Image (cartoon, rainbow, N blue to C red; front, side, top):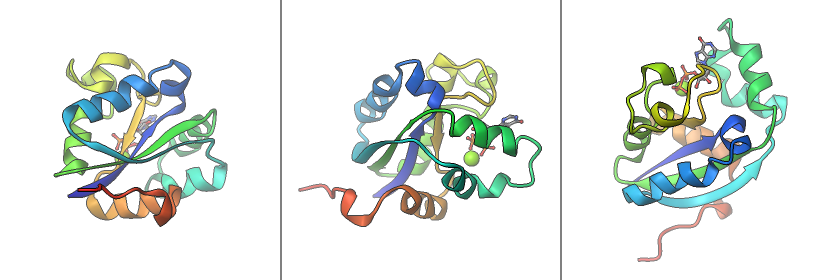
Length: 141
Ligand code: IDP
Ligand code: MG
């Protein structure tokens, strides 16, 4: 079992797509192990996207991700990191296949609806940025 951090980004929340996006993961057979709405502050945004600190789009990305609340979820399942990434599509929605979240709902490179951790190690760190251990509910059986 793997866990990964999913964020429905502010554009997805504003457009009323939080349920649609989370529902896709559930229907696929992944499990929501934790969920909360968070309005990220600058410090959390800069920590979450620290790997992009030197990129020309970093300041804009931090402004965007703090422009409204996100829906933060811990998604759990076999190979959850890769499965979620494939369901999201490419970073640029224009290049994303129909059937993926970005390919079905997005047109903008920055406002691309959803974040998913890109490795198990990064997932662990990103989850810890958003959730305390007690907020993540283990499966019963
Ligand atoms: P990912 O979300 O598919 O993992 P990353 O390369 O990690 O993509 O980039 C993080 C986020 O930064 C993207 O999801 C997107 O919102 C934004 N982004 C990536 N590249 C650009 C760019 O060239 N211009 C503006 N925003 C970008
Ligand atoms: Mg990334």
